[in-house]
Image (cartoon, rainbow, N blue to C red; front, side, top):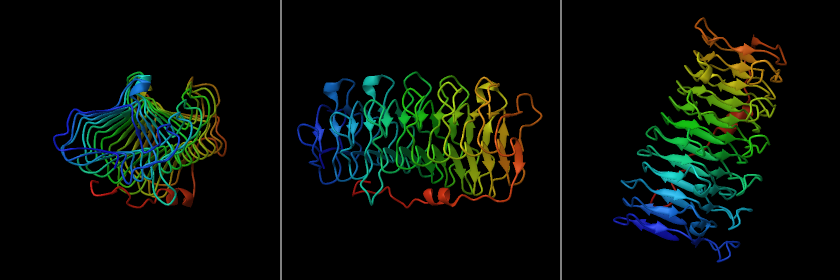
Length: 415
């Protein structure tokens, strides 16, 4: 490995280094496994800093660029680094697996709210392996925050440098209460251009928040920079997670992606909330930058999920997508779709139709709207049958295949 911090190695600073490259930051001279490894209770360390001089280039290593392993290690900060790119942040110089891997460690911070704290986490993963920008995984991975980063783009956010698989992922039943983004100004990540999903929540992970991000567009929120798969995938029994929210700053803009905006899939994937987002529009909610397929797809047995809500702050704008607005099929029962604008812009009046129907329901006991004040959706201007329709089973095999991922999160002896 390049650098290892272990045991009583607490409160250290690692800054201004080329870890896995030559001195110019342009040639791969990768270390044999990790670029930087924190393990065996090492805590309160800082990797990088908020000035260009403090930036580490952590690229070209054989496994993960930076790994924080399980144990009591916690409260480490990773900021201002280029992880998986060259020193200019203009091209991939990939680590062989994930850019950053947090395995069973709590209360770490990746990025921050100031531009200087931004990590560029792009270009990671060798063909034949997996490579997320950042993965948070395992028992004890609690209360970590990922904010203000560019994940899957160059240092300007204008061009794609894909991580091979997901931009950011959280997995395992005991990986809880982590935040991707945030509500404070500057806390949202740009998660665009990645090889599969922008964000994936899987393997029964619970109580996580994805808020304030741009997913599938450039930092201005008006130019497509698609993730090849879904913007966000909530699968494999992930429970009680929140996408967006009802407080100021929580809105995600999830648009321009190569498949669905959001997919909620599989039995046991229950009680998740999708609120306050723009799905298929630009950052103003007024222009069509649709996802290539549906805005929101529920498929394969998820139950009791909420899309929208009865308050104006909970309203999603689900418009401009290249297939349906909200599609509920294949055993997805007892879900609620309330208070949304589906097929109109954020002003509630300008037509911005989804190309197929606004809402498609094939399953049982779902509620579209309701009698409570604010529960009714505006469903207007869409193609297909326009409003709400029931259809025969429509399984999109390509989605099921994309979400069938192998176990891939144990790399090396310190995983």
